[in-house]
Length: 252
Image 1 (cartoon, rainbow, N blue to C red):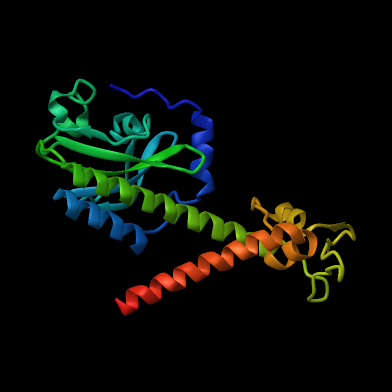
Image 2 (image 1 turned 135 degrees about the horizontal axis):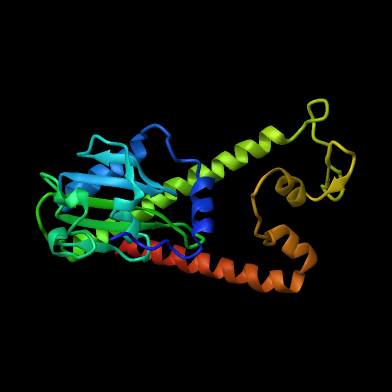
């Protein structure tokens, strides 16, 4: 039985594209995760699977030689329809997969468990999954560990995406005689067309990086002295209490 397409499928595919991970070489950081997943669940196959428009592609694989399969016969296509783990204890007893060629062939799939890889924006772009050729169960602890490992996969993807964006932003910044003109007073930046803008706007012009804002202690004291007096005194008090507790533990 073919799985229906996820809601907002176009947005999901775009989220997958932004990671620029499809068809990249194997990487130890991902292979370590699949190796741990296979060991924890005591299964012969573990995969980091990314569901593209018409295929599922394996960024990392343990116990499998192929690098991709058609999406139409993919177990993971069903798994990405939910944010929770999908467990098939015996595929020969599940109407969705009983006629699936991955199940009916000699040494076919019987057990499958896939945790969706959910991006910070809520898109399920693939799964971390474990597979066996015989029916089986997972313990609550094994499920908990698979969920934790899936979050590590997403973290790896996010770190690479952000570092790539920052590197590209730096490459796009055109230096003027080796220097980027910065205002001595307001710290604004002048672009290559002679216009002045804030640091945030300048960097956002060359990348998809977004910013959150806060106020440092020095600026807090300068611009909000009344608030600074309260907040900084609380920080000092918290620090004093922490130090006292540490000393008590040491003496004890």
